Image 1 (cartoon, rainbow, N blue to C red):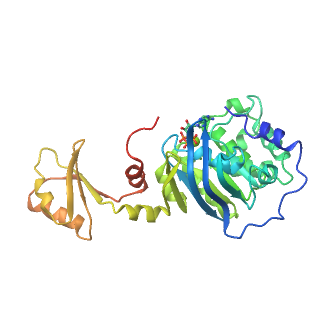
Image 2: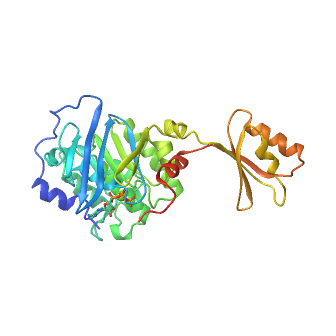
Length: 330
Ligand SMILES: Nc1ncnc2c1ncn2[C@@H]1O[C@H](COP(=O)(O)OP(=O)(O)OP(=O)(O)O)[C@@H](O)[C@H]1O
Ligand SMILES: [Mg+2]
């Protein structure tokens, strides 16, 4: 477990910064530029030559199987890890060389974090705020993350989701221009996850660029302007969620129940590419405007009784699985 930020700040800064670095401008478009980034741990290339840009005001998502190199990539952007080779520019600066200046202007939510058990929520926010020249009021952060009722609760007594929200509040404490959220909604309940999406959009609407990782493809699809899919340290695809889904050219699925009935006639329809049985359901794959209507007509003509008829469009999860395979990684 990491002692989030505090130890790092103490080592790198030696006290409060003297100035919020604002003199250096980006080119107005790219907030992050990564070129041929490689980071190895011993002989293992965790990140193996990736290049990408993130534009101002984007919500940019990194997705990929466990061990794909997402956290390592983000840590290189945050200045927490030095690249083995390649270049990284964040807000026009090299985060390894200009760590203090970058830290002042970014927010960081680490994948694994801990705070001292007895530190209370508001104390944590005040403490972290004190590291920065510019910081948000504790009250507004508590409100933003729905933590007002937990103001005086000790860290150890927060639920998993409340801890997560506290870490996001801490990432926002310095009103950053860019925020890195590693596994934004892991451990949150469905309501909290959705409200977190609203919060991320709110953060972006305030002018903050957002880089996040997630294992929830629905989240990446709904929330991110662009998504980068990484696998084994390399980029396998990068585009808007819509373009990624279209590029797959995947079939629409029609799913229904028809226990004990012969549906083989469906395979002969021109709009249908294949028919499968799965867990008692029939899954028909196909495409085109007349796909669903031709299947319904064929079922009626053959007097097949069907239940729970539904169509499912291809989604980002289909893209993810088709590009990264279905086997679990180490
Ligand atoms: N401190 C470390 N020392 C040695 N190897 C490491 C270290 N951190 C990560 N690795 C290795 O680097 C690779 C990439 O890890 P990383 O944490 O970047 O993956 P990730 O995409 O964030 O995975 P997850 O989805 O599980 O969080 C993995 O093979 C991992 O075992
Ligand atoms: Mg990770």
